[in-house]
Length: 83
Length: 361
Image (cartoon, rainbow over the protein chains, first blue to last red):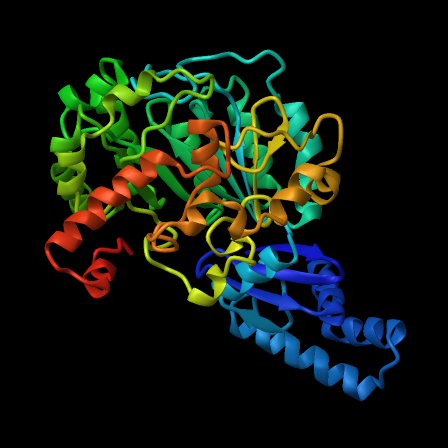
């Protein structure tokens, strides 16, 4: 998997399937933190600190994105190490 | 997270004029002496980019959003620092496509590719015959056939995707089907091309090997491509006021870097937009008047737009440029090939459906 950050968004390319994925600004922030091995809790804290969003909502968004990334094989496991 | 189809993604890059793929001529050196070489044979260009130059360039390509780097030459493996250059691109997470005659490929290269799983998208190998005699009548390099086949075997054994390309000419056209059978046995994609162009310095030497009309008519297709069909395209994209992006990605999502660092729109349109050793890649890509003008080229500006075969045949400004020094002219060799091919279809009373069936992929 390779990624590029372009104008605030992140594009991921799955080298096995050749499928492209795009992440919005918040998703890109989560992706960067995942690459730094942040835990899910740390992700929620980081997102609530940076964006005007309630902790519950941030937790839901983070959990959903991790599930999506994991489901597509873009991260390893549900707590998310980037490959 | 949004999943994008490849077509949608490519379209987004093209619409935003964002570089997706850059073809890089690492060197004009070559270990073979092919009769049709558009570069006119083995050259060592003064001021060739070295590993240190690529070290500076790579972060610029990443920052601009480039995913795919296509290394070519000359023979890209003939660059004296190629091992280091390959390593730099693989370490920096590029999806590499490689174009080679395979002769210089060794197990060290294959091991390097295997240390970066998936990052070598494909290796395209030039094969000119199904026998040593014919292949080497083109390469004029004894022993090259066996070495090229060895490279194919090595790559396939390592699970690396191989594609084979054959330029058909008077010396080798009779082995096309045998080459296709070899590729089928290896389970690799094959494509042929029958468009021979003059040398970049204007020399017409390669043209003597062009297939005559009667042999062009015998081809199953005018040419093949891995990426789009001869007849592809939505008619709405081909209105005269539209730009040419429906079939030509130059300066919109693709560019070509020559071995001296000049950024060109494509491999044959030799109009430098700037040099990456003097100006950052992203700046040339976004701001150069050459690229800006190319992005604005309208279909109506091209001679081909008035032809009865447009847009079945999609005119290549680069081929027109290399053949006539004028990108707006009709590329006559393409016209000849298409006329022959479509003429045969018309004589056989075959319609559009038959033509579509002959599309390669």
